[in-house]
Image (cartoon, rainbow, N blue to C red; front, side, top):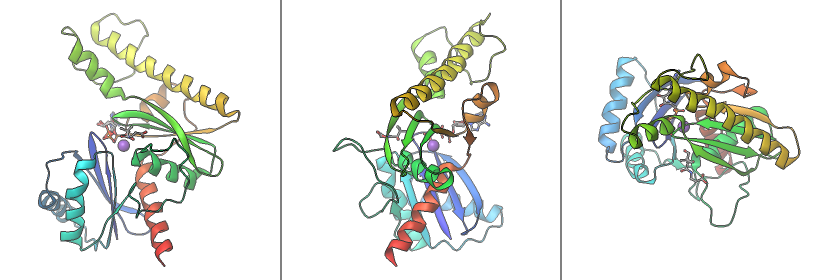
Length: 258
Ligand SMILES: Nc1ncnc2c1ncn2[C@@H]1O[C@H](COP(=O)(O)OP(=O)(O)OP(=O)(O)O)[C@@H](O)[C@H]1O
Ligand SMILES: CC(C)(CO)[C@@H](O)C(=O)NCCC(=O)O
Ligand SMILES: [K+]
């Protein structure tokens, strides 16, 4: 079985893939100081609690935080006797081209989302991921990653308001009843919620115009459904898009090795 690890700047998600389905998914806060032993105790406890007997033979990692990779490598080696595939490293082959400026290191999560989007929906896509940052990945007709857009994440924007302005509280995002807020929280929610609806719509429209073609918009990330409820911004929502991409990349590398 495959242990797929998607490490973002805020959260790290572990999923176990049995070759057909994900049999378990667990989330923890990303922490560069967590050791391999700590990861294993945590994973093993959850597996036992849920009665999951997983014979993990392969490990694949996508990490936007370089310093956690070392401990995840030790986890794979020490506890699963596996040499992990790390997306973005030369030994991890990708089934897509990456067409960006020379010397540019594209975030591995964006490459994985591109692979997943192309696998599920074909080419000419915009993949929008609502994580720590809100990213837009542009997928060409042949599946290549050809660039994109990075905007501040929804929660990051709310935190920035709170951190910078003494009178603004820490709040969670939700869809406000009205655009015109009549209290501080409603004003902040309106600014970020409707601001984001506009941001997504404008960026997708400009990408389509710049590329001179229609493109399907695929969304992923915990906050995408909240936006989709209010306005039709996306053609498809795929909750486990990044995890799906990791399984595709793992399979591709196994086939290449044969
Ligand atoms: N149904 C939901 N309603 C509201 N918020 C949610 C829901 N599901 C998840 N979230 C929140 O959405 C956020 C986005 O989750 P996601 O895994 O896409 O990115 P992240 O973990 O914040 O960022 P990164 O992947 O960069 O670490 C998380 O902070 C999570 O708490
Ligand atoms: C933009 C983030 C933070 C989104 O997770 C990540 O993909 C990243 O660190 N990217 C590196 C820069 C780039 O993708 O061009
Ligand atoms: K993510």
